[in-house]
Image (tube, rainbow, N blue to C red; front, side, top):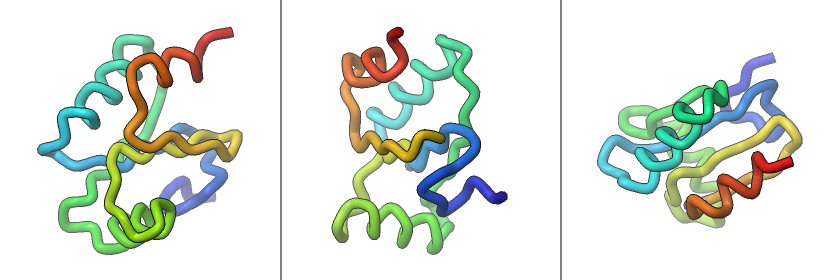
Length: 87
C-alpha cells in the first residue's frame, strides 16, 4: 500500500514546504526522537498540494502530519508533538 495521499499510512507522513519554519521544527523533532517518517514536499507536487488542501478544508496548512492510527496533526506545536509520542 502506498503511504502517499492516504488517511491510513503504514508510517508517519509529513506534508511540508521548504520555507515553512513549523515544518522544519516538526521534522527536526521526529529526527531527534528517531521517529521514522516520510516527508512529502508540496513544491512541484500538485497531488500532494490538493490532498493537503482537501484535509484542511481548502487551506494549504503545513505541516500536515498523518499517523498510521489515522490521526492527523496540522501545524502542531512542539507540545502537541511531544504529547502524541508520550506514553
